[in-house]
Length: 145
Image (cartoon, rainbow, N blue to C red; front, side, top):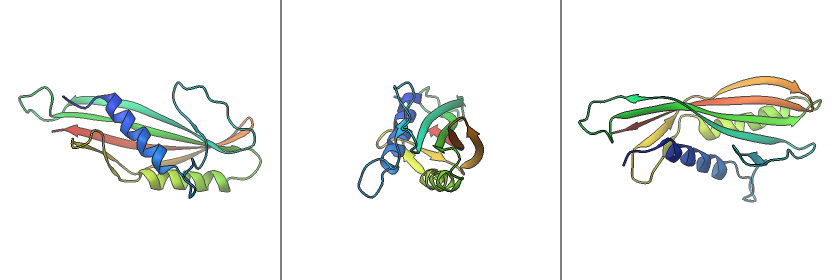
């Protein structure tokens, strides 16, 4: 059985959820997950997690339709902090998110081919209404051999 985009998304979400914990074991900030109801906490930082699948194609001729496939995409972490309070907290959270993802090897399925993340890109969006926003995009690749 080949790894599906849902397997990849689930592995990436688990990596983020477990890595985004503070010293007490709780979430460093609230996380907005895709297609889950979320109300941003008033005056407190929060993040949004998204996986954007990109290209999937045959990478290696293996004689087996379950192997030799390459899947790529982007992980997007959006950091929101209260507008008007400077960029320090947003950049600190963006740095923590970048460190969590920079050039990692993550198992999509236990004992199966891993996926790899590459160098994160941090982009300051700025103040939008009541929030100051910084986006982090992390390319990933999964090759089923």
